[in-house]
Image 1 (cartoon, rainbow, N blue to C red):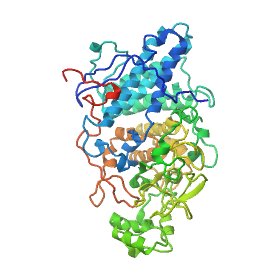
Image 2 (tube, rainbow, N blue to C red):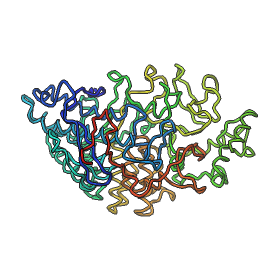
Image 3 (cartoon, helix red, strand yellow):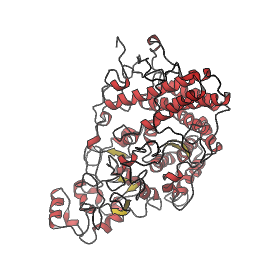
Image 4 (cartoon, rainbow, N blue to C red):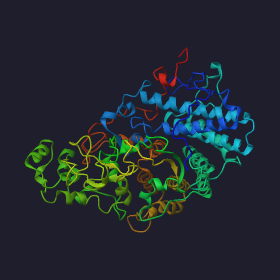
Length: 599
């Protein structure tokens, strides 16, 4: 049974939003202190039922992060995914970032709003008459965890933020300065330690019980461990990740394809899921909007494919035997060809004369076209690869079981697109003149949820045990325990059906640095499309090189067709550009943000 947090509560608890001024400088904040609800902060703490509704309001904040593909989902900021031009307004990726950027306002404003909701719970839950003490203590621990989650996200991307842990009732109290990033992580660690030390805070809720969707001690250990990783306190982090397993969380390993099946509705409450955003179509018709952002037009509900896998990331998936994938092994000379010329290899069989003429004008080297074997040649590039590739990405000439026509039908990703309404049923997208990779994860197959427009009820995991093991392996490796790191990663690879490390010559780990490289790839392959890896890339300080890499032709990375021809390019904005600038004006009116006088 899911905790009913699909619809945000109307309780707007006492505090409002904060707005700080001055990127990378000490900030002042101002906030709207007026309550905007019938149940205000002054009245809600008078009975246990109303007070418990307050924590539901805190949980509902997670759902609001994923209500629309236009939101700044962290996945698009990482190196694995790009967003289509119609939805592209992220200044950090175009060298135009400023404090006026809408996404920066939204991110800062929403997160601090949720933090102040939690502050209200933590400060006032102790005043509620008639509440059982263990319930009171548990709810306060839950609110601490939620507050720490949002502080963690803010601290990763802004690099040190103002720390508020009490309700602000007077504007004079809203003048907190920024701490450093390290100081803020330590404050999060201290706060999570209070939750972990609370006896009433459960280690884990059993699958299928009403506690599904609530924070637990296991989630607190997971979040605290990630903070320790930022501080490079590897032993403390390792102990936290080991504690997650002791709390009862474990890998999902049932069935023939457990990695793929993990992301089905029927398994969303399995023991791997540490904390998820609950998506319930019975109470919230829109449910999980990743269906809309990731899915194609043939997915149930007409997906928009706003988010597409980057070809450089797809190429990183190893061959099944553990050797690196190399296009020249499939098509000799491929990497020396200009990207536009390579499109010839991705064309469908039996093209018409007009289709061939169009592709030649677009730059394809049609002298290399095989009328009867073009599809078969390119398919070899995707055979015998790490199994997670086929389970996560729709690759050229692979099929997808869609339901857009009211029947479950296999569509094939072909180029150029012809028709999806009759055989051989091409996979349809909005830009039929271009050819991209597409996501499989979190996208409904067949006719499930056919009556819902671009959504499904698959929960959105924010923390799962697969990430725990990868984090633990990284800690072991940084501590010099390379063999332990290998054994831990092999648990992940074994579950996915990938060849295990140290079993063949290509998989032989050659020391700590080699394992570090392998681990970072494992994070990307295992956690693709889950809005998790971007924060790790920031911590590794690899984000700039991966997101803004320059190819051999001198072109900067960007959204790209499968053969490497760019739809647009990213632009690096200079030193410290990995940090979000803190907003300093009044542009987010629906968040009641106002600038402090004097800034």
